[in-house]
Length: 483
Image 1: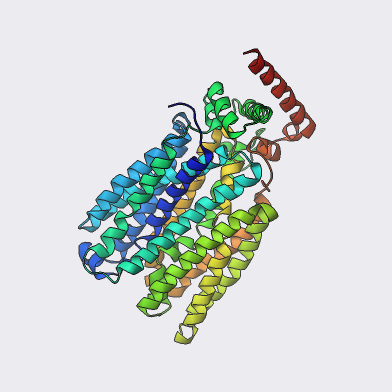
Image 2: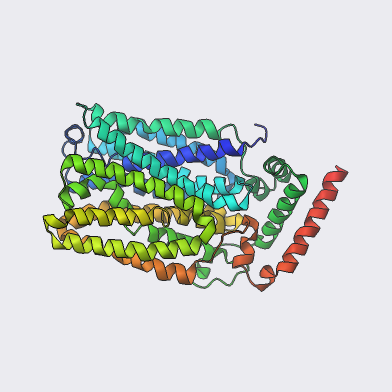
């Protein structure tokens, strides 16, 4: 395939990959309690039902770990997106044809592996093919917006099919995931890989060819190439070592950046988002005590609100920066979650509407802040030589924490009731000091200038960096002219 890149087409490919993620995350939430699903799964107990839902998350963690492995950079960002989408299709076919809990769990595991690969590769691919720095954050952030849109659509489709009868009530919604994976493959296939990946693999001519398509002005393309090559020189020979996990004194602080990303994403997914959205209908119906039809409608409305909020937060994240959005979100979410927990503790029917309102308030704040911002931060803060590994490990943190909450959450609620929500309230509070002390502001910097933000004094010397880049542009331009 020729090195042709169509940024708009490639970006839409990753968006459809995240639509698939959202669909898989939400589609079972609206059908778990339906009679046809219960009959097909042979009336599973709470533990088995939790495993049916959570197997997807644990397998997604495995998919992310595959992408984060030392040899993953040899394959390329684009190929991983295609491979992940294909694996999802295989798993969806198995899930749709399931007539037992074991078969459904197997299908969900295969879907999860493919999903983990797509979710770990998509943000990297999107960030590295976005030519305008000020648009990188919004374009990566809206990936989570499409994931939330997928979840919302799945809930509304589930609601529509509750008026049907027979096995189509749940089989058709589950099968519809194939649509998003096929779109992911169709939109991604015609494009080349990221220019940064070509340079990482020492395929400089192909990298420059793609850069010249992203930046029609040759001077700009050459300048970006010089910055990429400079970044690779700075990172040359720097290996990831566990000894640098706590205190990283290496020039580019690669291990510290990966650690911060892993913890940031992990905290985000211990705030309760997966517990809320995987069991949204159950929370409204069983825990809060609302009628089934009202619970189903509220679930669709809540997921729609989440999707809208993520898009809003993604587009406005460049105005206030990453840190302010995260700090404001953590503080506000803590108030809503603590109040929600207190209302559940009251255990009175009169407080059910207030509890639902607090849950909506939490979603309203989480959606533009902690939903998209961790994705944006990890996709842009990682060093080039370890970007795929760093983002993969960060996303694996997401899936591991999500599995913990989705699998253990219902079991905990069945045993200790409202006290389970104290766990989530604690992590909403923890988010504030963690961001304040550990997360640096990455807004407005090119990917190649992140080393200056995290590196030591000689890397942070602005004049030296500028001179090096200028000399690099002249040298590369002279070479191109001679050729």
